[in-house]
Length: 378
Ligand code: ADP
Ligand code: MG
Image (cartoon, rainbow, N blue to C red; front, side, top):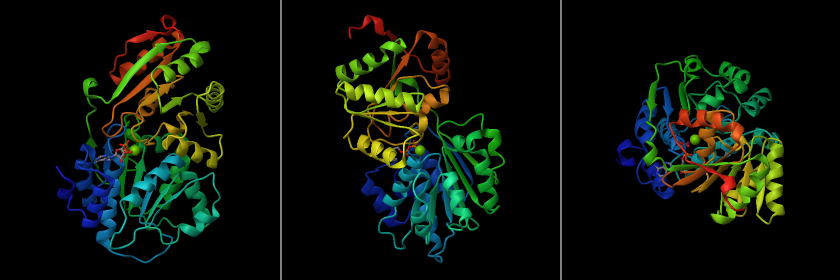
């Protein structure tokens, strides 16, 4: 099928072509017509399957169809995301798809960690606001934004947004929104949160669940190494050199550890930087930009970056430390094998973690032939 079938505005179609999208992905095929119809929707599809455009395209189309409204501080569309980096990324997709439209559509990201004043000013005239919850509430308290005219609410990484960590902020935001609105929820992993969703999705939602691909067709290849904590650093350097990894994202379980691993790599002549919640926003932005552009070979990150971040054709992800939950594992490895490119996700496992790792793989219905690092020469 082609994008033409959605009957999107021709200038939106032109932007799709300019982005190089040829055919819609399965989630786009199913979601776009339902969103245009105004339905509430729960969309579940694996990491890298194009969920962003499946809400961006119909939302732009709806705004165009409704014509120009008055310019004020009352966005019609609100997109909530868990991290600042994801807010920026989703906003880029909105912007790329709203070039040269017959009416200018203003989308804007607001997030914490940077000064609030420029955001307060810039919100004026916004159609689509992409926000992290905390900063959105700050802006509301300063009367820089009014949420009473929101017609469409999107929760990207919906399970995370409805998780305990955001509960109070989300409740506060829901209270500021009109009761009658369109709700769109997207996630790669959604199950135990489903009961909580009923409070949010008001009108009998369309549920779209794109089947996960079977192991043979999964673009993310998995491998694993048994390795003691003291040998992880040398093994990491060995793999980077031996497999000539030009771009690799390494996950650790804490910010301190991420700093240490990056520092050790640098000391050994491998270009690396770290990214985590304790870094300043400017340092976070710079680290991610330099990694995306290929200036820095290795980015060592916490789960901060595990959700939603799209790095073009990222070939390698390494779990230096195991995540606690299978869900985090799914999101971490989902940074590779995106769109149509293949990727390899390598996991380091200590002997004590064998059982935990088996549980993760079982949940994912995947199998790995583990390599014992003791048998390797490095
Ligand atoms: P998800 O949110 O499902 O993890 P994204 O929306 O971030 O995935 O999209 C993953 C990648 O796929 C992005 O680089 C995006 O530009 C690309 N993409 C999205 N839709 C298409 C399409 N129809 N054809 C080709 N590439 C696409
Ligand atoms: Mg996404």
